[in-house]
Image (cartoon, rainbow, N blue to C red; front, side, top):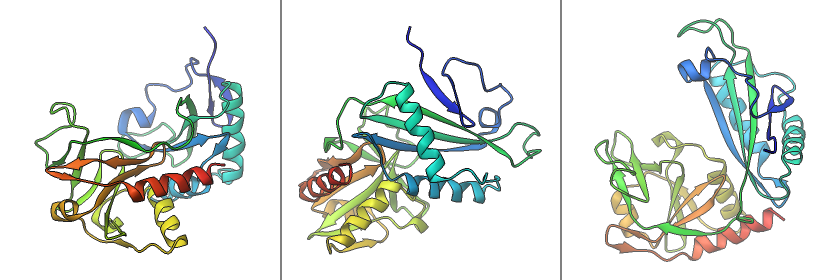
Length: 259
């Protein structure tokens, strides 16, 4: 069996080497965070935004951010890893940061360790996915797997739709984009940021405002975004069917950025 590798605290090790113990705080207390990063066409996509986001989260959790934890250093580590794993063009990269072991619910230290993993992806570039035809509003009683749904639309305490299980959500009405504001509780996704930036560059109106079921059923188009898949077009919600013109447009622009 051909060996596979990961990066642990800056060092290349075998993926099968026991480097993390059962007392690891990520395992015991969920004291960790991670970023999923797309590597496409030999290029690491939006790395600066990913590093900025994870460093902000580390600061929020009072984790010490090492001086060498920079975009430039992480870029070199990722490129070294994909080369060693013989990945030519497409991969999912996972950057995990966890507090070093020690203590119980209260940690003994705020120092961190980090792990970088890579996994090959077969599809080249960003491909508009059109399989989400049965999303359901999730209020705690319904679950994607048990009901065989394509995805779940998550709501906050005010009943506003904020995101899906792993993606931000956009609604298009009369050519204008609408997405949930961060204050409603959605993830400040890196791909969400790219879509808003592209919209600004091309003079498309985009607003961050609360989304409701009525917003979705009244929209012309609905699409989901995340860093790995890019854009997923929602074909249908309840009895409403959607077009995909803006989803096609943004997918094209993402692929231009990947060149």
